[in-house]
Image (tube, rainbow, N blue to C red; front, side, top):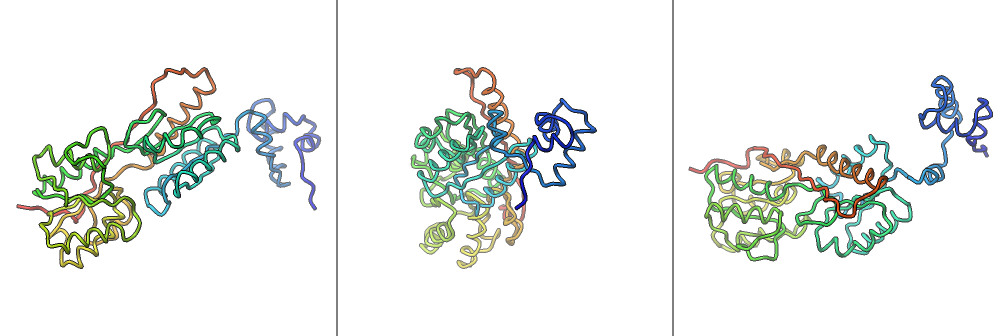
Length: 350
């Protein structure tokens, strides 16, 4: 068995203290750069790895960030965001621990308690709505700093979100500009009556608000509730609607590119061509939008910028925790604006 070296033993080789070795390995001042480089080269040659937890706890900081992801990474946007967040945090020299908590409240509480045991410096949790926050906020106790992302309702913690309401508005405005007047929606529907969608920044609210502002028909049967992105859910409901012989919209705004792409085959099965018989706009600008034919017009969010803003808010929160945090400070809330990517799934109605 190969004996593990210690800081003291490496120090003996170079005639310096263990503290000097630590400074060299962590690129801190206190030792000449020439000797520091030699120490790092030697440590690398013998495969030395410092005891991370012992070192970090001694500094009272682990530089570890816990991410509690409340969505399935099978969703393209979730995987993209986790990838970008991990890259952004690693560039800032943080360690990342990601837990997928997509199976309910108990898995979320377990993740938060585990992060507490790890003594992480901060936790990022999302997507999180107000009622979901209330269900898990007791588990925030003991955590130095918690922030969230992806809410469509106000939260009492620092938060970065996508402007989902604005994304829906842009999508519907685009359809209207192209001459469509009978527009349906497939996605997560709010419980509020269609004409009373207040206090929400969701895509559903943005859709309803824009339709009403343009004094177009907002029909109950033209809004298909797809509460999640599981395969078959939206397709089955859309298929039933199209088979029912009812009056159909001329265009559809979909909650996501994933749902829209899966529903292409439903339209084709009913003899409908895109965009001749129906126009489609999705959200996320995922790779799927460029694979389907005709290519899908979509609402895009810059996920690199989204990750940067989340990490910027996180760092500001950590800096405040190290100082003297004010119990009455204003929340840090940022919102990422969308943009429209125009492709062939929307035509022009005369």
